[in-house]
Image 1 (spheres, rainbow, N blue to C red):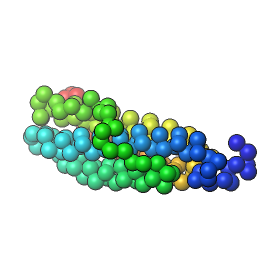
Image 2 (image 1 turned 120 degrees about the vertical axis):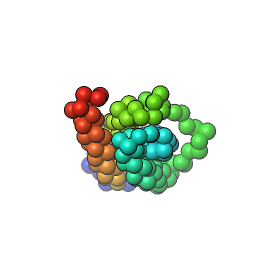
Image 3 (image 1 turned 90 degrees about the vertical axis):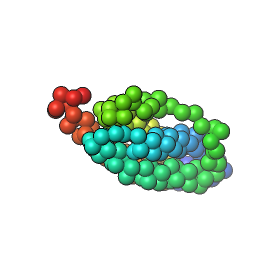
Image 4 (image 1 turned 60 degrees about the vertical axis):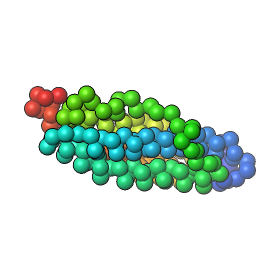
Length: 169
Ligand SMILES: [Fe+2]
Ligand SMILES: [Fe+2]
């Protein structure tokens, strides 16, 4: 891309193809956040026992943040002349977030959360890379969200470490 092209907004007619690619990436991100909200709601309710409840409470706090991410992705899809999809287009992917056999099995839950956060981190890094010099506004937004997800993963890695230290993981 020439430097003149870069000065043309992603909203310009001439950039429709790039815009559609960005909308595609954002739509996947939107679904990831929605699925995470579904699974964190369940995981904030299901766990039994004092220690599992502590993890559940942490997930409960995350729900609003993940929902906020979904709304940001949705708004950006609209800004780029896309349409936010309805549930009929949804395909579940987080099989690892299925409730454990025992609702006191906090380690399996923590591992599931780390996997969900890692999936988001990988996809958002891809968006940051693909929007470089193409769509700085999307890139800027996704960098902020990526920062949140790295914080979530780090928190749950800390929980897992605690269990590993005790020989329970
Ligand atoms: Fe998120
Ligand atoms: Fe997250």
